[in-house]
Length: 420
Image 1 (cartoon, rainbow, N blue to C red):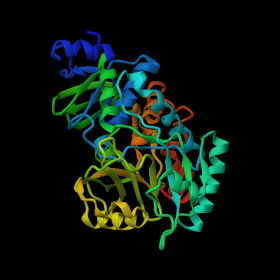
Image 2: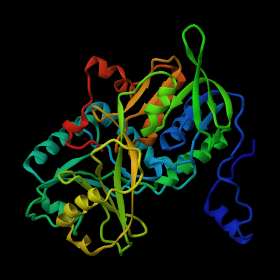
Image 3: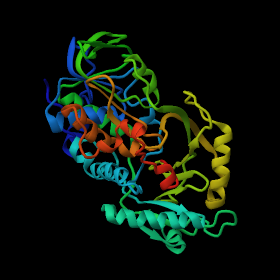
Image 4: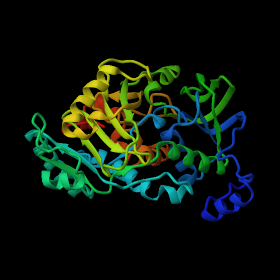
């Protein structure tokens, strides 16, 4: 196996001298083998991270990552790139903080610039109820070892001068501030993981849809999959397909407690730098940051119905922008550049599932809802341990499917006021 060239300033200079003729493909595009130790369905961020940590942490490299479309073409390329870990519940804070810490060194670990920007994330308190809730979260975060603080409106205005804090409908009463939160480049995260997986000898197979899941033996354990590129045998199967989890798990004969909804987002035309933090306004369910190109990246909520469309929803965008303009009057004259929807997988308690399934050696990772991007490295780390050992580690254990039968919900949407 050829060793992938290391990216560096010296490599850039060298290739500039020879007209960039020496760059290799970032990852291989092989034909599938007859059998793998592990098959991962879904080459989004979570699937690729699972594969990467299987190789890095456990030395398992006979792995195939199957993708029915193109790598990173689902929610990984359709989110608003927010990274934070200021959750209220202990299991949530643990896995998201693990993820945030892995983002800090990801560019060095993968030798690929994922453009992590720890610019800070603030969640505005625009009602007295939110003030009490975020103060409680700040206390919980202190106990969890997550660095956050509740700040007053004057500090909010200092950090983000374009905010209008007086109201009238939604005055800014303070904010939960996480200075080490931020953003990263979503495509680069997928590409960096893919390049590292390919270098380890793993096969990333695109345009390869799973059409059947096979079981054998007295206990009905997984034995392989049928795909549009042929039959592939495997010892273990990991399903990481976000909003399509129900359909893929159905091929194995069991149902999942999730539903799929479109999540709305848009970006404005690019403007000069005016905002160097991420702001979430949960009272109106809108959040905004400014990209490196100058676009205002704006996220809204989910549509109020189940669907698999990836189109923008005009009424939802109108509601989100109308509310945000009161808090950010500066954006009222901007033109929208583009809008889109992503298919998110929602559980009843709005927390993820990283779990064994009723079929032996099939594992599932889903239910991240609107918060999947920030969790990619932590999710992959925890899922790799589950797949490698067959039992969950400390990060994944609370997120078993058994919690719905046992009534031990991890209800972030109620506890923290917002699920994403």
